[in-house]
Length: 259
Ligand code: NAI
Ligand code: 2YC
Ligand code: MG
Image 1 (cartoon, protein in one colour):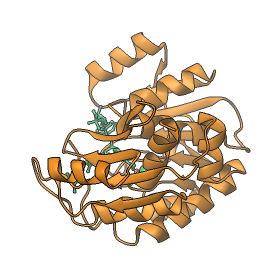
Image 2 (tube, protein in one colour):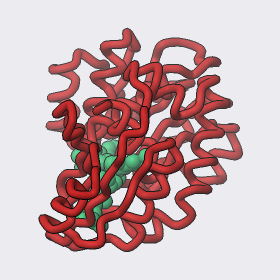
Image 3 (cartoon, protein in one colour):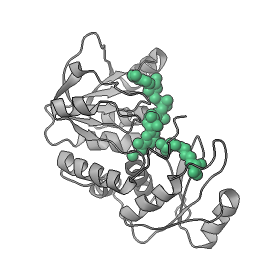
């Protein structure tokens, strides 16, 4: 499980603002607008209780505080409980939380106690980054390169296929690549026979996973992957519109999906 570090979460508000600006340039909508249009939901004073969890590798410094800042950025009334774990859950409910946000090392969830809806960060993140990529106003076709077909990438690719995009998929794990090609009917991308794409979706825990041979001028690279899929030099060389942010876009997707 690739865990966030406190450094990934530094200046989360600035990272969110930069990501929001990039999303607006690419799609014409901000993150709120994408979530509202995609899920058909609008926040209406739901109170969010953020519960720190000490299991496994324990509390990640900046994680709860980042969720507090992220929920406020998207217009939710939220609070972080004083206590962690079971006591924190009890505290959240007793203090009027309607939606619970909490994460251990394997699952980060949003649970709406009022309507019973529950969301997992991995599919919600893959789907929303894929949705943003699919709304690129200046895409030259419906061809998408998808690199990384795991717990985040696979749901995002499934979403793109459902939206009628022609997905070329790649993953260094041959078994995962073949399973995805057969189950979703995507095209196996061969790095030895590269071509240019105007839309690229990446969800891997590796750096520099996107070769220059597939990057077209002014393409969109929509990637929740940490570390970043391309270097700053490559981004500037091709004028890449980079959509990337460590926690907030995925969290917004979770919250709008449980309203
Ligand atoms: P995963 O381990 O389930 O899937 C990653 C996939 O990438 C694997 O199938 C692996 O074989 C493949 N891969 C690794 N290196 C590769 C390379 N060089 N080229 C092609 N494929 C490669 O991981 P998961 O849960 O899907 O997470 C993916 C990334 O997204 C992680 O870095 C994780 O930290 C990040 N993440 C970011 C979020 C955000 O909001 N920004 C939210 C959730 C996860
Ligand atoms: O501080 C806490 O409450 C910790 N238990 C939080 C652990 C989060 C672990 N998960 C992750 O770092 C990644 C994130 C990208 C979101 C999903 N998994
Ligand atoms: Mg995110």
